[in-house]
Length: 45
Image (cartoon, rainbow, N blue to C red; front, top):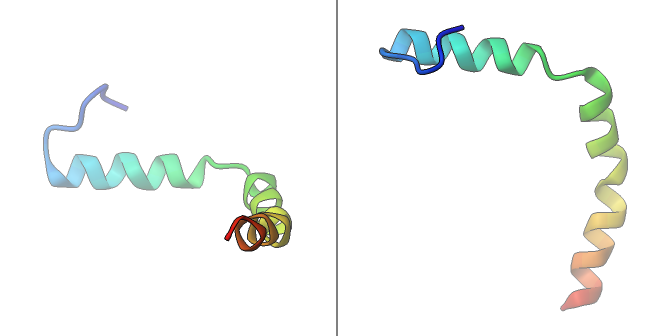
């Protein structure tokens, strides 16, 4: 991957590549932590 995309197509490719390289556990952890984060927001109001 080039350090800086020089076209929209290169940017799209770079973003897709980055997205596909995020481990599934990262998404699982975010989803699993959502109830606690939502509760924290609600209690802060």
